[in-house]
Length: 281
Image 1: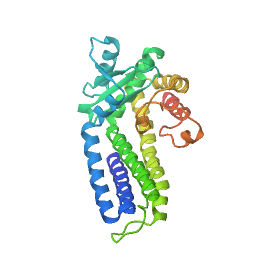
Image 2 (image 1 turned 180 degrees about the vertical axis):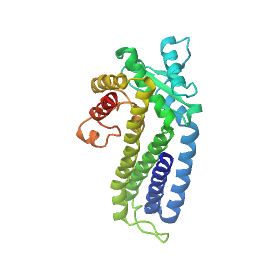
Image 3 (image 1 turned 60 degrees about the vertical axis):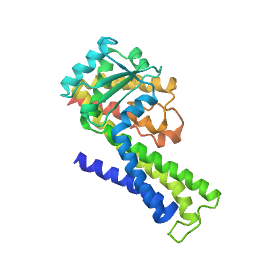
Image 4 (image 1 turned 90 degrees about the vertical axis):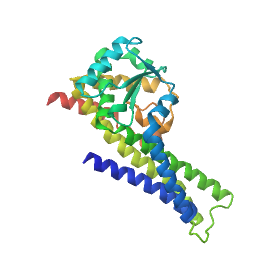
């Protein structure tokens, strides 16, 4: 069932991208957008982990570099019945972490230096178990591709804006869209892509919270960690790309009510409440 939902969401995003291309450039625009969608899916499938890790200047470590942290990840991976993922450290003060990789055999987990400073060992176990649950659930690739296609739709919407300014929004014999249709797509396209991406991300966060709590053996490890991370992320800024913000365990971006409205993360209060409810079972 989870695989079916994933396929539906991915097809929806691809169709949206093709729709934008059709409105902006008729049949030729639709063809270009279709090729673009396939290209994005191919690149993100094979290289998404390397791209994201390089974006944040993550450095791979061995057991000799950080024996306690490395052995913790290895022990949790064994409990989750997962292959040992690659382990990375990001030199950032904001406490945060994420997982990436196209499948469990190519999984990777990354943690900031900040998160290892403020969390206890049990809380850090809860966080890393959460990230391993993402790998076990095979939802990292889905969120990465969703972000890429959503970003592509936003990029095409910007192109539509410039086309309108320079007269590119006129109708043509190939069936190009009218100026009004282009304007609507400029507004609706990015919002629709963001909403679908948000639906993917919020569902996967709840699932990873539950799975991580089971791997760690105590849901309060993660619940206590989330409370600390939420407070720290509001106080310590992080230079994060909005297209990848959904990959982190807590939103690395800070902002006002509009940003919260379109946040790809569920409310921390809800996540903590669900974890506490698991303890009562």
